[in-house]
Length: 147
Image (cartoon, rainbow, N blue to C red; front, side, top):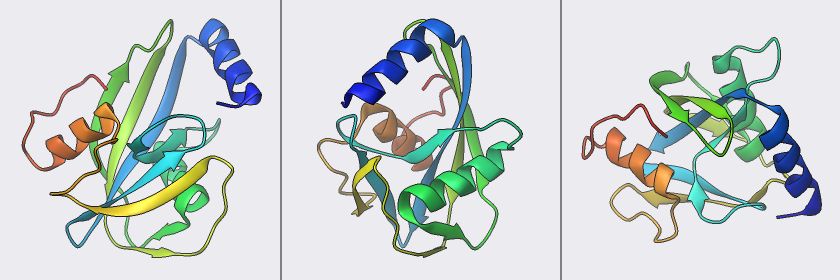
């Protein structure tokens, strides 16, 4: 993790009390698109924070475009809302399902890699939260309210 992100997360942990984020599973042809960040280990879902004045649906569309160049062909479908009591703040994550998209090539300092995986052959280093979301989507686990 770079110095900027360490400082950002440190300040965030002492100043912020509640945050609102969005994440999504892009599912096409029985495959899921996952990303690896430059600042944390493991494969995870696409997403980020909701900016001031932005709706959650607008935020997930922006994040998908910024991180993987995805432009939605239809509106994202709300899947669940989660709470993550990470360290000393409350993070609320609005989670969407996304189907077919059009893609353009993008470069993001945040994204180290992106890759399609079969829903039946997920990577060994998938993040625990991402694995739980996929299992919920597949009906292998009950939808939780905790991230």
